Amino acid sequence: MSDFKKLPVICSIGGINSAGRTSNEMSYKRMVFNNLDSELKKEVITDLDSISDVERSKEEILRGTLVRQLNKKLYDPDGLITEIMGVNAAAQLPDNFDISKLYNSRQHPKGIQMTIFGVSDLLGNFGIDWENELKPLIDPNRLAVFSGPAIGQLDYDGMGGLMQSRLKESRSTSKNLSMSLIEMSADFINAYILGSIGKTGMVAGACATYLYNMSAALNLLKNNDIDIAIVGSSEAPIVPEVTDGFLATTGIADDKKILAMQERNGEGNNIDLTKACRPFGDNCGLILGESAQFSVVTTLDFAIEIGADILCAVPEIFINADGIKKSISSPGIGNYITMAQAFSKSKKDITELKNSLIIAHGTGTFQNRSTESDVISKAATSLKVKDLLVTGLKGYIGHSMGPAGGDGLLAAIGIWQNGIIPGLETTPKLADDVSTEGLDFCLSNREIDPQDLDAAYINAKGFGGNNGTAPIYSPYIVKKIINKIYPKKDLKKYHQKLEKTQDNKIKYNQKALNGNYDLIYRFNEKVLNPEEDLSISESSIKLTGYKDIKL
Image (spheres, rainbow, N blue to C red):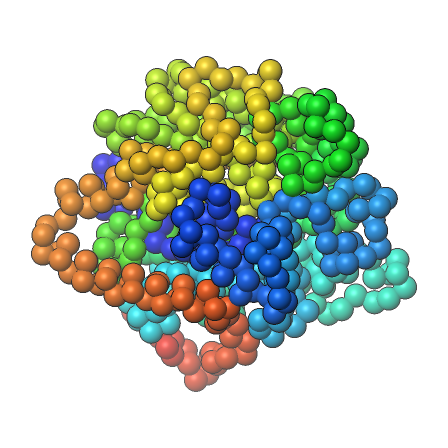
C-alpha cells in the first residue's frame, strides 16, 4: 500500500453470538475458556450471568452457551425442527438472554433486536462519544453504514409472519413487510441509533455478506469519499423454514447424521450435540447459529486524529465469483483467487511476514473440508506463505450465515489481545481427504506470542459462488507503521486522546459486566422538519444538529 495513512483500520467491535457479548473479547474468551486464568474465567462467568435474572451455577451458565440442545419452547414450540425434522443441535444466543426486554422492541424481528444490541455494544466499546465528540467533527455525508443479513428477517415478526398469516387464517401486521426487508438492519442503525443522513446500504453475498459489506466501506474510505463507517451483519436463522431448506441440501447436521458420525468414530450411541459440528474432520453437516457482529472502520489518519483505539488493519477484501458451476451450492474456483490475492497483498505490505493464521470458513460439511483445505494449501504453497496456522470457529458458535466473517474478525482481535488461538476442539482428527501440505491445523487451543502473529486471514464462502477473503494485519504491525510515518508531536497528541478513549472503554465494560448495556433506540426523537431544520444554498446544505454539507 503506497499511502499507509489511508490504511483502513478497525477501531471497535460489538455484537452478540452464542458465546456471548463481542466487546472486550467476551465472546472470544468463552471459546478459549479452558485456557484462561482464574480472573478471566470469573469475568466471563460474571458477564454471562449478568444477562439473566435466573439463579444459575457456573456449570449451568457455561452449558447455556455455544452449540447445544435447541430450546424448543423459544424456537420450536410446534416441534417442526426438533421432532419432525429431527434437528436438535443449534448455536442460539446464551440462555435467558432476551434482548426485547432491554428496550422498547415494538415487535421487532430478532435480527433487528440483535442489531440494536450489537451496535449499542459497538458504540460503548468505541470509547469515543459518538453524539457529542465524533458527530461534530465530520461532514454527515462522510459517514457510511453497511449492514444486513444473508437471508433476511424470517421469524414471525418479519417475513415468516407475512408468509404464514393467510395460511394460519390471520392477517399480516403493518410491520411484517417492512421489517423483513434485507437492508432493514442498516436502516435501523441510521434511523434509530445514529440519526445518520450519510451513505447507506448493504451488499448481500450469502455467507460472505459481512465481508462484502466491509468491502463496500473500504472502497469509500480509500477513495476519500467517507471518513468513517459502521459495518456489520445480523442473522437469526434458527427458524423452521431455514432449517428445512438446509435439510433439503443435506448440508445440516440432524440427529441421525450426528449419531452415525459418532458410531463411525467409536463414540457410542449417546448423542452429544455439543460436538456436532466438526470442521475438517469426519463430520456430518453444519449447525445453524445466531450472531450480530459490527465494526467501526476508518482510515489510519482519521483514527490518529480522533484518538481511536486501533485493534487491527483491514487493507482490502478480495471478492471473486466461481464462474461456471456444477450447482448453485457447490464450491468453485473463485476462492482460490481470493485466497491467493490475500496472501500476495500481505506479503507485499509486510516485508518480513512472520507467522500467520487463517480462520477458515470451516462449516463442518463433507464438501467444505476437502475443497477449502485444498484452496488454502494450494494458495499457501504457491505463494510460499510459511508457518500458516489453520483454525475455524463453527464448532463453537455454529454457522451464522451473513455475520460469519464478523465472527472471524472478533476471534482474530481476541487472539492478538490474549495470545490464544481457539482450536478445532470438536474435531478429534482430520479427515483423510483434508489437504495438509504447508498447513498447521490447530486441533486444540494453542497459546502463542501474539506479537509474532503478523497477519490473520478470514475466509468466507457462500451459495451462488460468493467468495471473500480478508487479510487482517495485527495491531503490532499497525503500531510499527504509525511510529514510522507520524512525527513525535502528532503521536504525543494521539496518545493523550487514546488514554481517554481506553479509559472510557474500561468504564463501559464494567457497566456491561453488571448487565447495564444502555441500548440506544431513539424512536421519534429529534425528527428533522424540512421547513425548520433545513437550509440549502449554492455552497452548502445546513441541517440542525449536523455539520454543514459543502456543495
